[in-house]
Length: 294
Length: 293
Image 1 (cartoon, rainbow over the protein chains, first blue to last red):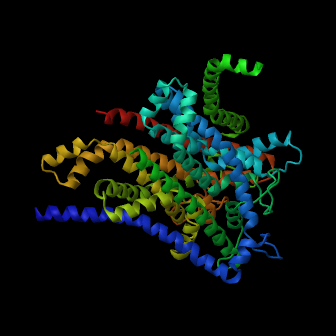
Image 2 (image 1 turned 135 degrees about the vertical axis):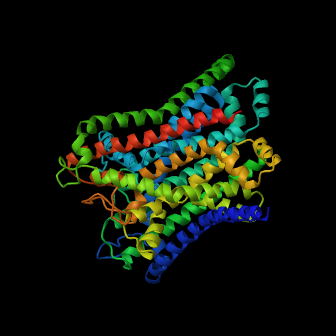
Image 3 (image 1 turned 90 degrees about the vertical axis):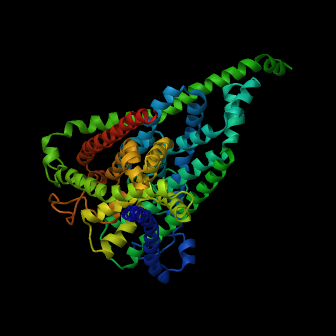
């Protein structure tokens, strides 16, 4: 009996330890980012990092302003969300309010496939199919451009937004739907005047998490958006995102300990902080609305 | 005046019209992404299918596009898949069991839970920076299979934990109560009742997480995996390349012939990804039918 109790206790502790490892991962991430970028910020002041409008650490005339990388990230993310936001919402409304159950059950795995395709494959698609297509009718389109990468990224994050929004719509109590139908409203009126407003916080969460996802996306932008860190909002131009810069440096032979090496950690910590804030806002709002209808 | 009358007459019909047009819009949007994906796959097949032959699968990489093969890449991908699975599955499943079966209403568990949802949102390239610092530099694994597998294992850990929890949550409580009623301890209940009942769901999660690991490129670039590795890896400490890396390398080259190679490589990669996803969906459906007693 005593032996049994000890075994039980040992097993519980072992299982708890594997839970503890996830906390160690977070600590390791923050530690890696901070120690390496600390060396960077000793040389480059945080002020010039955040306000300098040029990013040229790999040239002889060095500037370390993150803004061009952020504008590249912002531009591709905005394009992706303009595509995935409305599409994802319409899909969510259609699947939760219109589509028959059996259709929903069979179409969802197919939609999830969009998110399962490796991103390097989407990058190839953007570069070899979408860019030539856009070039054929948009004047001034460069071979590497933000538009093509952003559009393809948008297609990739459709299932993130649609499935999270659908969960939110689905969580709205049935009584609201029935009341609306009882008043003679059509499905469309019920969906957009009753259900969507009631689920609005959940829909906002899906968009916020979609944005976080797009900001961190790497391969599509590294392949199709180019490597020119210029401060622009022109989607026809080649840009460089924070993630694409990290890839660019990693592919070269940058010696460990050099300032160039540390720039990727400075870029990384910027990326980490951005996505961390967005994800936390998202989860906080989600928790709130889950309590509302629980 | 006329406008007013028109509106009055058609109010009901207009509502109906809007309602049914949204139906078509919904169907269109739902299939939009899938149609684009289909166009793309069609394109890839057209470009790359003729390039796939025995030589493509068994040749070493080469600067000559027509002679280059993906042997080192697919062997590397298999290595990465197996090593990542060995590292991630025990950790992920145990953490999932702890949180779902032991950690209810306990402060430690709720901290871990918040932490996992944060980790799940960390971009994959950040895991690359983590791997570069910890596994490549501090532990001196270098740009080896071991560094790659550890990095990807950490990356898929949150997915595994969440999937394990979902699977355990789906097991009806009556099963637990019956087992306790017969005098089984908590661990005996989990080991002999809950885990077997949840195994289908856990398996689905494992396959989906591993398929994610097979398709990852960015973190491996950061830890210094190479696209050009002239030999097949023999031990976990060897340098390596994987399918997505070699595809990325070929895509970045200006010559047309390498784009054909990339398309052919993508066909193989997609085949693996879709196969894994298909098996996962199949298992999930089978398991869901079983669990709904």
